[in-house]
Length: 176
Image 1 (cartoon, one colour):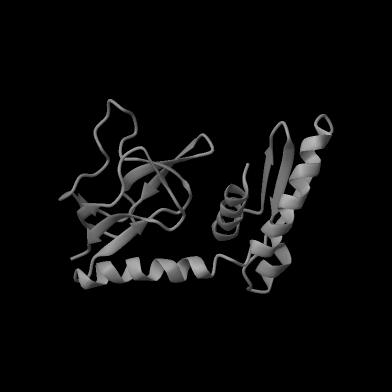
Image 2 (cartoon, rainbow, N blue to C red):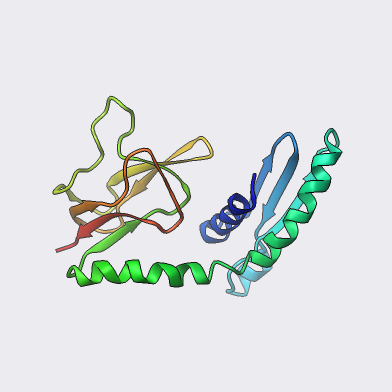
């Protein structure tokens, strides 16, 4: 697991409200826990990253430990990311009142539930709030993504079977 994957996982844990995530591989074990006291105070939960090296591979554990230091320092770094996404948010505003359906997680975007099934939505389809518009696979789990607004699909912004990032626009919807 590289540094960017760990950072993306930390972002997901803090946004999703998950209290704890644990990943164990041959070389290492990572536990990310949200701070429950910060939630009670109304602040965003700061995830705490804890890495436990696996005893069978001590040389890998020694290499992995220094990599964790930048993660804790880089945890506040998501603030510049939304600023970078601001220009893309302004583009749909220029196209009248189109609403973006965004990815709530990182993973692989699929327009169909299976290769032999039809797409959940096509350009021109009318959707209702709560309708499934796509599936995102993350860590071998297939998550159905539901529309947060009713309207008409104007554009599909991501190719089928493509990787997507957190908060990446997937569809443009005309709510009128």
